Image (cartoon, rainbow, N blue to C red; front, side):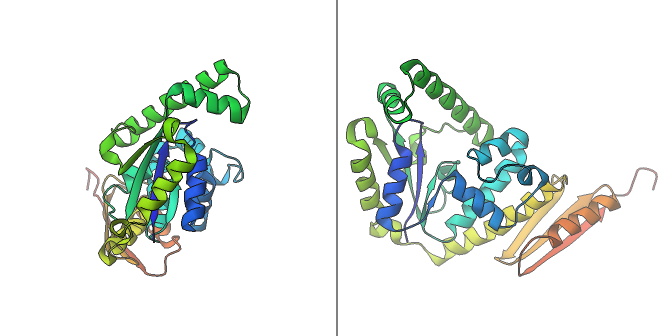
Length: 272
């Protein structure tokens, strides 16, 4: 059951490679659209999410621009939900960092010289050379800013990847073949039951945290303890009875078959 994350700079052919790899391995490709749909299937909805055109591209980019704290919890929950299945190709969205301790995943970084990237955009998107250069510069700056904000890391850090491929030299077909061969290795396919169970616990924890944030609840004084994939307790303190009730309502609204309990106390005011 191969699980591959592919990270790229725009114009490096990462999308084409991801499609080739997913097709050859006969697994699902999780691009922006598929990850968004996975989030909606998980029942993670908020006023911000519902107000967006669900068919438009850049779904998570727009969530990030509106509510960055929700974006991070939402993205972690979705990536973990995909990863616990043990197979698939995840394109971008910090998946190589979110899953860096998940031994079942193969992490790939795809890059190319700027001149090659410019030519790729000019050929595939019919941009002028000047427009292609501006798009690349803007995209690279946004990616660097996001990774600094979200993870305090550089996207190009080689320690984050198992395989780094220069498509300017190899091309997308050869790059995809390299990834497929690596993904089929015994070392990558050997995914332990303990790793999958740990991922399931993280999925539930992130779902709960995202639900709390969506309901404008301060999570700084709350702790989410997950005992099993369908069993958790939200413990901590809040300042008002109203917020305590909203915490309980948010947890009850989660589409989980197991038991999620709340043990939240209201802190006494200074006059009490």
